Length: 245
Image (tube, rainbow, N blue to C red; front, side, top):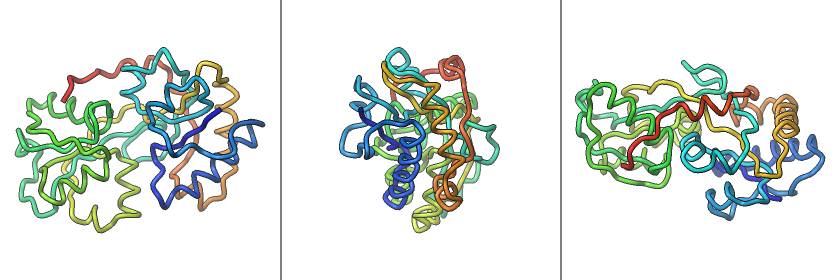
């Protein structure tokens, strides 16, 4: 069996995620002693031995919906979002004089990857609904790298996962201080926990909910965990799949 909490596993948070997993494992009564951090996320998501992982809404509906089972969605208490939902923070350089998103029509855009709900699908839908074009794309591989690309002038605009933005504000103020929020996209279901073909979603959901409640306040606050929400599969599949960037 393998388990991964790799979507929000910044270096300063790894010890907190280890404590979270230890509680989940104890509540569940079985599972690997350690989280897997040395494998590609796509390999983990598609491994038949998967016990627990967290994925993104776009990979789930585009490729994983018939391979993994939804367990539940964490609520991070994000501003302007219903429980279990999140959005994208559209950011530009702090010194960029453009204050309206319309002024970024056709501007160079940094994205973490093509199959990212917050980094690509959400901003594509947000700008398309306003009749705006996304300009030349720069694929960076990570939200923090997209933020850095904008700060360094290699792109003019990026969409950052709202929780990642909060974590960067806490742990990389040097980076977020060089940027400015232009707009936020509409909320969508947040990153769900999933299990493999042999997993028991109900047992895992119970173990995770109990673990969140049982975490010490400092760890719970560090991970921005407020609870676990049951968001149906249909809510994830209802979100549009964007064209490839």
